[in-house]
Image (cartoon, rainbow, N blue to C red; front, side, top):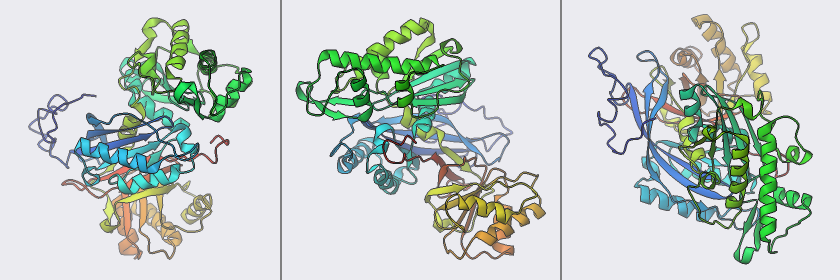
Length: 510
């Protein structure tokens, strides 16, 4: 993906090498018709560090002229904030006020205000997700950081975002190769297996640089449970407020690297590695021999690739040393590739991976109900024979609901080629469960039938509430959506798709 330094949103020089504009394609570069320029922010709150990245994204229509799906084709990083150690009030409470000040300062330095940002993501990751106030933090940013921001990533989702963000997916695609991405952070290490540009499997294990954080005189200032478990196993217990020796630091880092490489080698794992694994192991993976390239990202990668030597009062440099030793012993030198983004991989990935846009076939009978944030996706399994109403009620019951209510988005896939009869049947089923709520009804479709379906619901079935139907949008079962206001001449509707995962209380991996 090209990086451009100039900040002119409409400069043709910016795009000429990307798109050949021929005389028979006069609309190719009209802002808002075939191309969309938006400003995006990524805010990453990890267990160890937090930072922001502001980018300009260019989206272009995919495929044939006037198809309604837009994809990001270009990304220019406009500003990167300094990296801050995530502030804590206590072991379990993140300092929201300090985070807020840091974010406001980054906006000022970048020359943005929440009003001038179109989209983005707050990604709360790793151990930070388990803290008592992780949920209020994402909600704070959803309201304060711009149009529709709010995502938080459980381990598999975070691995996926890092794989995109650090350039591992692009490398795999360009080289038609199998790439292993190791995203080594403060609380967890994520692994992604990527074949021919597709992430085929992800895993995560609780080993990281800040499971033990040190204050003055090597006194333990923060101690996470996995570190306690590992040090107890080594027969060298550590405690808050107690100093640790150089030998203990080395032993801990070496043991973490051993456990990580059990996952990298595949096959049978020790009880300890199994205990620290937050996910299933990598699937369809034959071990190191299966890998063409290894790319490291995350905070510790800055030490692994020797880009940083700063001491953050944690075990990053120690952990990196043992990872590097094992990488060199396990893989040939030419296999080890540097990431295009190291510590900032996750947050850039979120900005790029989650944006889709619905085009001119949307039905919006209630623009005033946009933007809408954090809509929970409900995906009924529709098969031709079954009643639409029954399928909808079954899908709602998974969320303990009996009818459509505020904060939901119905995701519908039309199996057969859509015609008036099948759309009418669908509309009648929706109408039956739409309930008495006055809240707007949000529907997302993969096929371009939003206008027709919306028309039937409003004009034929006289549904009372506002109806917003967007199409050309792909969503998964546990996704959440933010739907923005229409932008540009052709009234493109930007949609952010997120897998929002909050682990149940710490200790239950999930």
